[in-house]
Length: 359
Ligand code: 2P0
Image 1 (cartoon, rainbow, N blue to C red):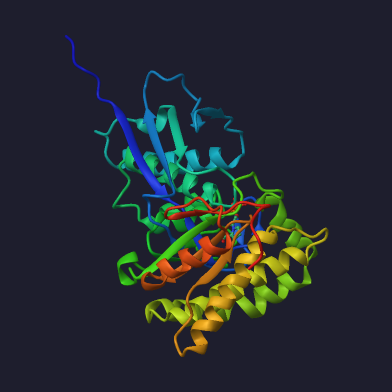
Image 2 (cartoon, helix red, strand yellow):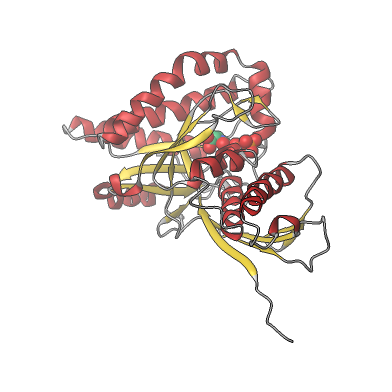
């Protein structure tokens, strides 16, 4: 008899998220448990995303999962982050199979995964966040884990791939609760508000450089943990109050408060990088020129009795992300274009150095 074999395959995409309260430092480097809570805004999937297809097949050689990233095969190392993600997801599938004997034993088959980003990898544009989130989402779809397994539970697994990835399992405004358990059971992402709660907030990516960054986050943050007294102050006295204040600002759609906290936290994070021995520099002269430009726009707007125009934030790279209410976007773009006349952008703002003058 002939029957066409069932194909077990799922494709999912996951968006990039940009933190407004930054994650920087681990209390457990193996389980990826952070030294502080963080909070991010998930960007629109049309622009920056990872798309991942996962396929399980009884005919794949046993015991050999494989993964291709942007067309190149990655090694899945024993004890590594990818291995842990595959193992944790297979464990969840196995539990489902144990409850329902009629299910195919996908947990025993090897998986092949293919993942692509539509933006430069490792340029401070959070590629590991969307990448691991898309991996976990595609395996969850392949294994048909939801809705029994919640997105927060999946975020706990994505976290073990890359800390910031746990926040990309949700859209909108997302908190990563660092948790206090040594097992990491309470270190997961929760939704603060859906994107639809505050659709007026827009993000502009200013691509200052798409070169690979100097100090990778994983190594850089542990050097900060080991050497920066300012980081200890940040963890104990700065972040807890800001988490609450920015959550309130989001709930109240209070852009001035949101912007003030976002810029302060970006600057505090980069100050901790500078306080690291040896120091870590992620922002460059163009990044700093954009800070001055936004500060000046805000000063002028507030002098007219209006609120702030925009907020800037920088991750482990030189690129700026600006958050602004929709009504301000055209003016911000016009000003950016004026000071960076060779910029090439539509909704992604590209800025290049060295021809960009300071404002
Ligand atoms: C963040 N960043 O909250 C912060 C702000 C960069 C600056 O999360 O070691 O790639 O994989 O957990 O998640 C970058 O760190 O590091 C990061 P790992 P990750 O978005």
